[in-house]
Image 1 (cartoon, rainbow, N blue to C red):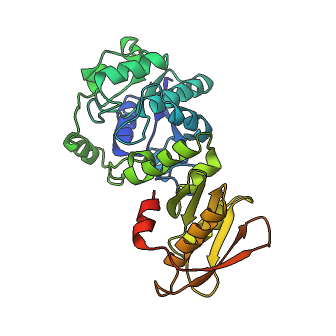
Image 2 (cartoon, one colour):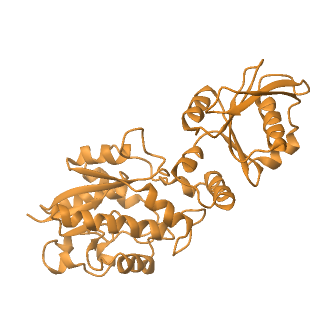
Amino acid sequence: MTKAILLLSGGLDSILAAKLILEQGIEVEAVNFKTIFCNCTSRSRSCSAAKSAADQLGIKLKVFEITEEYLKILKNPKHGYGKNLNPCLDCRILKLKKSAEYMKQAGGSFLVTGEVLGQRPMSQRMDAMRTIEKESKLEGLILRPLSAKLLRPTTPEEDGLVNREKLLSIQGRSRKEQIHLAEKFSINDYPCPSGGCLLTYEGFANKVRDLMQYNPDFGVEDTKLLKAGRHLRISPKAKLVVGRDEKDNEKLLGLACGSDILFHAVDAMGPVGIGRGAFDEAAYLISSSIIARYSDCEPDKKQEIKYGQISTETRESITILPIDEEKLADLRI
């Protein structure tokens, strides 16, 4: 029996692509790729949307954690970034290469994606699709069932493994045809089409840019810290992350490294601050005044702030006024 390997995001397009191939009597197995930048990933090892979709389709799902490899292309993408800091083409090439490796192991004959011609401005243009196929060395082996009739026939179509007449010619950003097809297949449970990559969001992308500028050798642990708290650039060598609420405080404490600096108010309710980098006396003072500003007290009243390395019990203490709003705004990332 012919087997296809499906890149399953969990969105409607990839679900429909799977349905179109399954209807032709072809076995489908799904792969999903997890990075630290996925905003639809639960605490489990897989994307919750992809797992739900695989269960709905009744197909096997294989999940790959690729954060380390992804960080390398993020720092220096051959094909540049999208609107914010999303290296879409390089990301796609990486995932397809990984899928091809798994296809050989699993006995698959070709790859399937839910891509729609013209839907995404960077990675789903005709020329971009051809570039991706060429650089992933998968020319003729990537079948896009939703737009197949608008594209050159693939090897599985030419070899008679897939009936091209049963594939579609959808293009553009409108989703009317997909929604109609979902009704036909009785697919009612699928996520909204918003992007699942945090790098497409301006606020998060700004935090990554700051990290790339001041700590170009950053790793996974630095990246995890971007997903919690308010981020403030204290100096070229020091950054402060301040919790937004109790849950955020707990998350920050869980992400802190032994060399990080912990800041907290002594006599007032408020956030914890995690300082990362090289802190001098000026950085300690500014960070303490920020913690005072976000704590529950009068804005013109001095507060006692304690700080010290996470790894030690030793704490310094300073009594300081909260930072004023104008200076605070200048430090926000």
